[in-house]
Structures are given as C-alpha cells and as structure tokens.
Image (cartoon, rainbow, N blue to C red; front, side, top):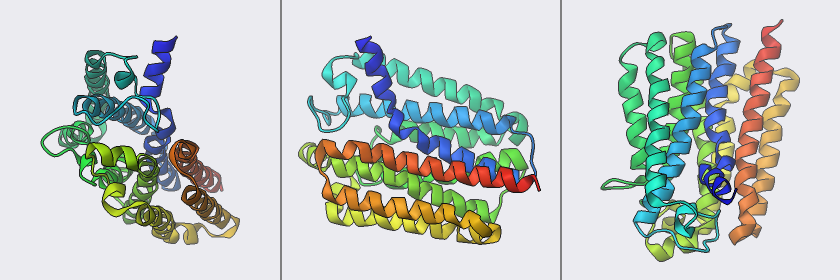
Length: 294
C-alpha cells in the first residue's frame, strides 16, 4: 500500500487537470463548429494524460539523478529520493508510460496523416527535455514556456485539427490562454520550492526573478488568458459572460492567498490553480454543448 501511494504521488494528480483542460478546450470549439466525431479527441485526451504522467515521472527520476532533490523537501514527497521507489523502476516506468502514449499517438495518423508523427516525436522529446539532456528546460527558467507550448499551443490546436480538419485563429488564441493558465500551476510549484531550488542550483523562473515578480506574473497570466478569449466570450454573450468573470474573481483571490503563504502551505494553492483552470474549461464546454442544441 505504501508503494502504491508513492506511485500515485509520483503521478502528481493535482497537476493532471492541466493536460485535461487543453484537450477539453478543443472539444468545446469543435462542438461550436458542429463536429460530432469525438474519437480522435478522446485519443488526444489519453495521449495528453499519459504524456504528462511520463513527464512527471521523468522529472522525479532525472532530478534525483542530478542531485536536485533532497529528503524532507517542502513539496510533495518524492518517492525515489525518499527510497519508496527505486531509481531503476522510475526510469522504466517513465519510458513505459511514454511508449504507451506514443502508441496512442500513432493511432491518430488515421485522422491527421503521417506528418503527425513529427509532432508526436517533438512532444516525446519535450517530455524528457523538460528535466534531462544537455539543457534541461526546467533548470534554466524555461519550464513555464514549455508548459505554454506543450499544454496549451500543441494540445488545443492539434486536437481541434484532428476533430475538425483545420486550424482556427480563435482556437489559436485559446491555446495560448490554456498555456498561460497551465503555466500558473508550475509557477505555484516553483514559488513554493524557490529556496530548495536555489540551494541546489536549479534556476527556475522564480529563482531568477524572485518571489514577488513571479507572483505578479501569476496574476498577469490569468488576466491575459481571459483577454485572449475575450472575442470568443463576447461572441457568445449573454449570461455566459459570468464564466470568465468568475474565473477572474477566483484568480485574484488565489493570487492574494499565494502572496500571504509560504512553504507547504502553498500545496493547496497548486491544486486550486489547476482545478480553477479545469472548472473554467468545463464551464466553457458546457456552454458550447448548451448553445449547440439551439
């Protein structure tokens, strides 16, 4: 039971809403456009979740191998560092989950063509490059940019493409919106871990800029994210406008709370940021489903 809990913790379930939200955002736009073939969309959802789990496993393994984790850290318990999971088992699990994601990705060739293999290969490389390689993105202040690309731009645009057969400018703006919201989850994580990261030389954005500037980026990301979808929401109009307004209200409340907290007290804020993003997208999807019925 203890080992099972360690593996579940390594999956970082609190962060998984980020990968789910991006795909569901594409679902909503496809629904607005009257698409009814959701099979490629569901496959994209499975791919996205597995790719994120593989990334989380890789992050734990490579940070351990690089000496960047220590026992008793402020954040969630690291199974490999604490001895609950062997490094070898984590490495095997990383590539097994990534391999399963790639198999699912290959099935999408049926809808999108063989050229999608290049996109899949790029994502697979990104899963590892986030924590490993000659220039690990998460160690050089580029983690947030990686999230914007791999959890916003790519999943939203390509899920929509596979479901609708084209790209769309409003979907592209929404993909950046999802990326910024997702990046905020990482910002909370690095905001919490800034002292531990600084000690081991892990130069996250928060280490580079400091806590105050990073918190302000968190605030700006949420506001810009809603601004990027303003045209979409204005087009919908009516009482549905309460959805982006509610997101902003919650976002400002989370920002104020984050500024007052430190260390382990920030752990709930990570999950709250991810869930706020997911609830916003679910509300957007519900809007699309409701409107498409009339």
